[in-house]
Length: 108
Image 1 (cartoon, rainbow, N blue to C red):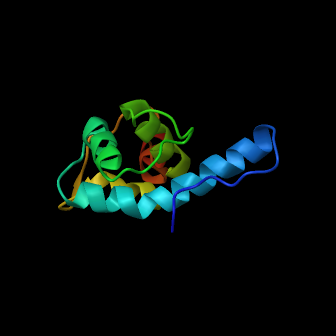
Image 2 (spheres, rainbow, N blue to C red; image 1 turned 90 degrees about the vertical axis):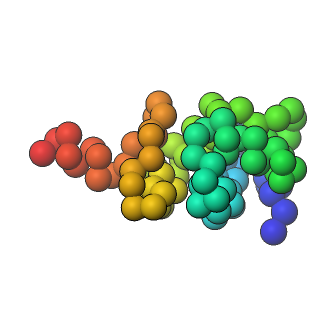
């Protein structure tokens, strides 16, 4: 499946829908990259560039912040925990990268 945001509607809701769609498409790719040992945001960004996956705005190269934002969009479910773990260990989390479990631990 090509990584191309849908076109058409404009406005904040449409933009959020496109961003969520792209994040969902990238989830398995990012999981594969992390499984190969590249776990930092910068390493993931470089791997996305190497695979020629376009950035959300389809310009330039991937940055660590863009990867962080994609992971943040996925953080509303358990998928982010899978993406952030390698070899059964929790990986380092960057700004905005939280999980449902870590929120519950703080509240508890």
